[in-house]
Image (cartoon, rainbow, N blue to C red; front, top):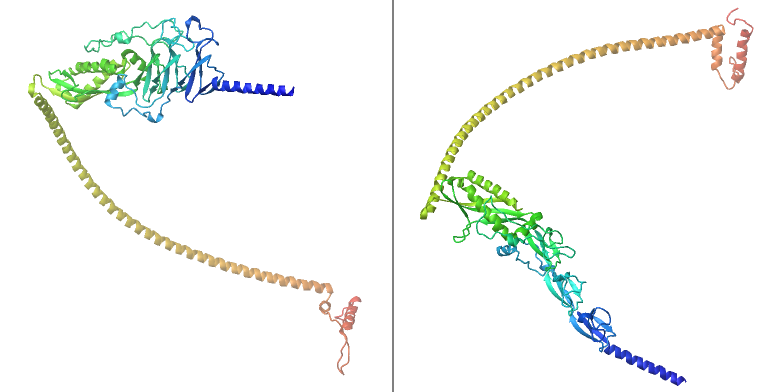
Length: 574
């Protein structure tokens, strides 16, 4: 039993390994890098209406699904067929090659720019315009279809820069450059078809059908009488009012057309380039002379009117051909014929002619939304009527005559100014001399005033010193008197004090004596008060001498002296 189980497990493992190897090697699709695989189902339910693209799972035919790079299992070669195709890559460009500005364009490039045929050089981003090759036609017969419609035609949506898995059996991708609008430009958008959901189409006649094709130049009164289609509403076919600002836009060129319009002021000149290329404007003066002028017009377009200009004229080159150029010639002839020949040589009249030309051209062009900054008269030639070969001589002679007249006038004015200057100079020198005299007079008077002031100051100083000395002596005398009085008062006060002290002392003694009763008693009191022996000893020293102990003697003597006083006797008398 165990052997059968082991054999069964072994067979199962062998069969599983075999099936796995079979699936791995025969039912696997490997798609390399940068490639994709398109699938075609060889068996299954037929596609309805004999279509080639399977719309439901299990249908036979080309599958919409595309396999990207990698390994994909469970696609057996009996049921499936596949093809490898490169991935669709839409370039993003290289920013380092893009021009940073457009001011270095040549004249030829600018001419192409005005006509709308110029393309900026550089590796700019691309877009992919996708066309569905298989499917039914659109019901309205349009070649532009939506991506999810299933109809055959150009898809409205475009592919932006990147890498895509696009089924080349169903779709075809064509690269177009993206719309690049540099700084200084705007893009005027023209819808080629109506957007979905917008009923009807624009009924206005295209601008190209209304343009004036005659060669005659319009006058100021009859200019621009033409029928111009209105600007289209958003979503409708025609030129849109809103313009694109500088930047990069991914726009389907089958749906929208973008016209670059340079914003700001530009130059348009009618000058003499060579003998064969003479664009100067000719007209007769009121005196019959032939006047030829070279004019440069500085003009520009406001961004808000760019769409209207493109809608009416198509490109900038036609603005010059249809508006500025004809009107400039017409206005020059109308205004210039009212001036004399000498007016175009004199500066003031020529400037007046230039101002009138600028203002008239500005008013006319403003109706067509064209801004005129200045019409500058740069070259002027004056030719005599029927001058023939001597035209240059007549012109130079007229210029010389006018110049000499002006030079004579200027010389006269110069001499008058010089004479006035000489008078003023003489008056100036006279005034300068007067100033010198006045300066010296003022200096002398100043010196005298300084000396007088110094003498007066010395006199005042001496008087002040003498007065000060006198006042000092007077004060010293008063001080001496006061010192004498002080000494006298102090001496008298000291004598009075001494006298009073002695009197007080005498009165004190007198009162003491009166208190003791007699002077003798007071003397004894004084003696007793001042006598303070420590001891008295009596010893014999021979005949005629008597020594005693003073200690005892003080007591005995005092007792003896006080006894008569105690008894009320008068020791001084009997």
